[in-house]
Length: 101
Image 1: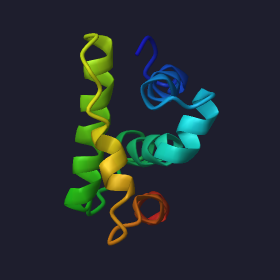
Image 2: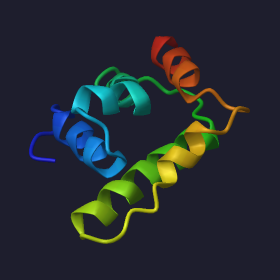
Image 3: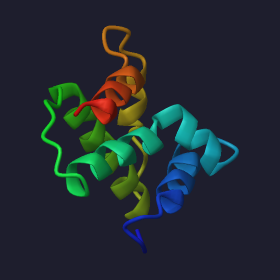
Image 4: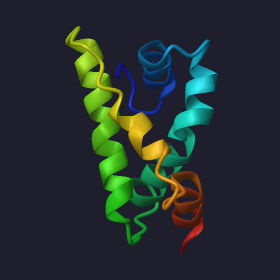
């Protein structure tokens, strides 16, 4: 990403990978704003928060999907798998973590 504070390129990339019409749609679907908010709370505010392993896996899969696209490899759409896991609401978890402290 060309700027550490601009997540629009990531949203645009995810929109391309997942065939969404815009980066804004990708942001809503993949909760990148919430994830960036959590990152800001940790990095900028020095918050120490308990991060569920599934959030870490979410980040891993987002990175994997983005990297495969950048390398022009076939998308495995791993991130989408976690969105279908009804046992874990990533958006709600990220919201809770962002508000902690």
